[in-house]
Length: 241
Length: 255
Image (tube, rainbow over all chains, first blue to last red; front, side):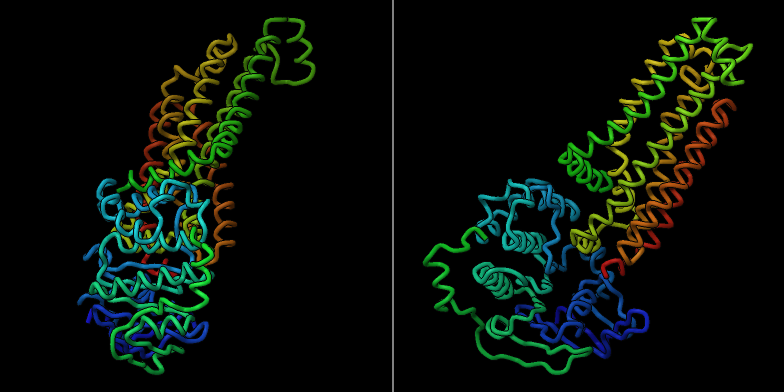
């Protein structure tokens, strides 16, 4: 198991956001987190990222307490949040170089590593423009490219397709599924139940704790031939996003 | 790593020419007012009739001519220059981490293998860079101009080539600017509510820069040893603030 939560809980002041969470995230799979707003999905992702400490129980990633992973196993965890988290006055390439540099990557190394992702995500032609001129879909794709830069073992996504048009959302989901197929453990918090059912190997219903875990058998693929998605493609709508 | 973080701050500031222009203009206004004041005193000092007339307006101008007034003017100008520089650095540093929180980049900084000391020092250095360059340029030019005016001899201790002034201008002010900036950066990162953080940054900026600027300018006549001690305290305080701040900036900042 890549990421494990054992009886994990988190409180903020008097508010108990998560309690007694038990969840195992295997490599090469997508684990979906679904549930109501305020149910604790984002908090659980932050616990896995090591950005929050559990107030009870344990959260481990790759065998280490999650809070120690960032410094002791650099690049193990990749993160994508609902707002892309990029510097708007910098170009896409400058953003990637800056964040790659935080992990000790030289500029040319960042360029070489990111080139395939940028091509796959249709960003190659835009990467030298300031991010402030990009659409939200393009920013989210760049955020995904940044998360993959360090070849993470665990990829955490917090509603990555919120507010994106269907084509951009489809591209993100397809890339996430492909990453899991390459062996990465993926945790995806989402309200998009259709996409969750299509690409997740297991889905945990979270409402203050793990209410239940639903497992799906067989290969997971995102439907390519939805009629309305085809309508977008046929009319070249949203191709820049 | 500190330089890597600071360079990104500089790059973003470089892409905000209006902001850099505004900072340069602010430095120019204060330096310009000081230069105009000294220029005016030069004119008055050269005319005994004007000196006599001024002596009827203010007791500062008397038997010593306009010398005491020049000393007071340059002293106030020094205080304004130091306070203004510290204040600008503090605001930029305070908003540096707030900017990361607002743009959603803070979790990605915290997720990276970067120590809190490096992160804080990089942010402070990033905030200090452009205003310090403009401060040295604009206020340095103004000082050079003042040195060409005859009146400056009356305030020799408050201007170069007084070693105390060099220490205050080149070391003391940047050291205390780093301290105040560090405090503002810490506040902006640990206070959970962005609005409260902004308010505290402004309060710290106002009072801390007022006091630090006063200490730097008022102690100039005490000589180089005292100014060097003030600067030393500033550097030590900055080091302590960065160390203490790094302890406060735990991983829970990702909330």
